[in-house]
Image 1: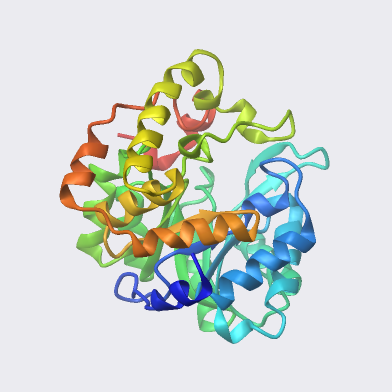
Image 2 (image 1 turned 90 degrees about the horizontal axis):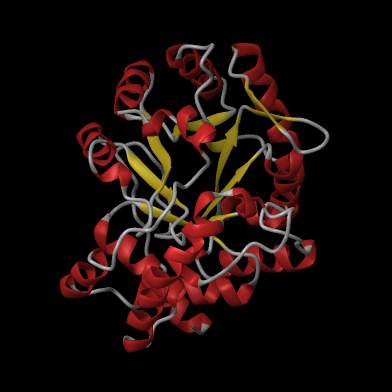
Length: 333
């Protein structure tokens, strides 16, 4: 897609009743910090700059992506461009020097400490949407949201978001302070939120930013690049699940080819058609991937296309391993 074509889609959507107006696709920056294998900072900076030039406004990161690397990178990328973007930041995950995951800490003092370091690394005075990455089982959600509300009142945060929580947690949090947005995984391969979470969001006037729209590259045919690529440890990319998924992915690719679309464009267009008003967050690592993804905005699907894609078949394997799935509030029934 040319820059001219990208500018034709330079409209915005207003997520929920309290969130900021944003471009209809967001840029996810996790993959720029080594989660999916080796990256190049110069190429990542070019990609963020290209996204902003093409109209993208929402940049999503986390203070634990690359142990601070992602925030430092985003801070460099938005220098001189701060007024053109909204920053969505996840926090609370604890990591060891070896990259291991050590749990969550959402105590009030920890929340304020995380925010302080994020503001410094990003080089900004305020974070647009601040959200705990997961629940802390030792801290009531009301206490966490109350602490972020204090940061809103003090001018350090503009909006409060959540990530990977279920309907009841959404309601409890929303009673303390208006929740602008829930970040949750959603794709042709991961449709769990449709049953209770999405209806609750729309009832409460809360938006969603949808990550994993390409199922971490599964739907485009991407494969783990080595042990450092965390997808190598996910069920859908491993063993018999991967073999079964080859058939579904092959059908998707044939469907895309018939419509002269890339598999990524098709997967994104399906999400846009299924969940209008919600904002897919696309994780790309270079400008070519970015332009391909943006092309989905100019290729809306028909209702017949959506129905045909719905019937392609289920993807085999969970989106995380069993232990991680048990910790997700969004997966509790």
